[in-house]
Amino acid sequence: MGIDLPGTEATVTADLTDDDSARRAVADAVDRLGGLDAVIGAAGVVDTIHRAETFPLAEFRGDIEANLISQFTVAQAACPALREGRRPSMVLFSSIAAEDGLPGQAGYSAAKAGVLGLTRALAAEGPTSASGSTPSSPVLSRPRKCSVCPRRCVTACSPGCR
Image (cartoon, rainbow, N blue to C red; front, side, top):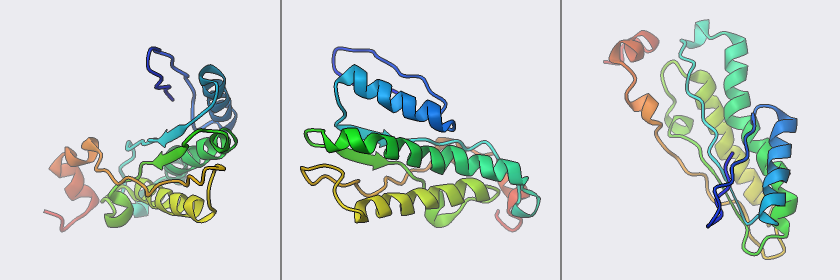
């Protein structure tokens, strides 16, 4: 987790998969900045590659935890401070995997689809502040790590994909 305030190089370090750590990090950022005007959720871990039939459940859950639940935890913790912000905004990064899927990455793809739903749900709930700001549309990106995945890995995870 980082802080972007001109003239500072402040950093807040946290394990965003640990709810208490994530909430403390948001509180620390609010304290250091004297409030909060924006949250950018860019959590993304793309380390597990397994065909769905052999995907270890613990690793699948880890993908959901790192890529979706951490985004929710930070967004939830930030809402009270954002309500007090001048022109608050929230951007949550997702992935094209949310819409297209990635071979061998059922957990990551499911989590990023969840980020799309989460962002839309937050926006549907209405403003997070008195000024009427709502979370923006999710940002879809293609992780570089996925675009440089070795062909043998893609082929092993998705037979017929040449």
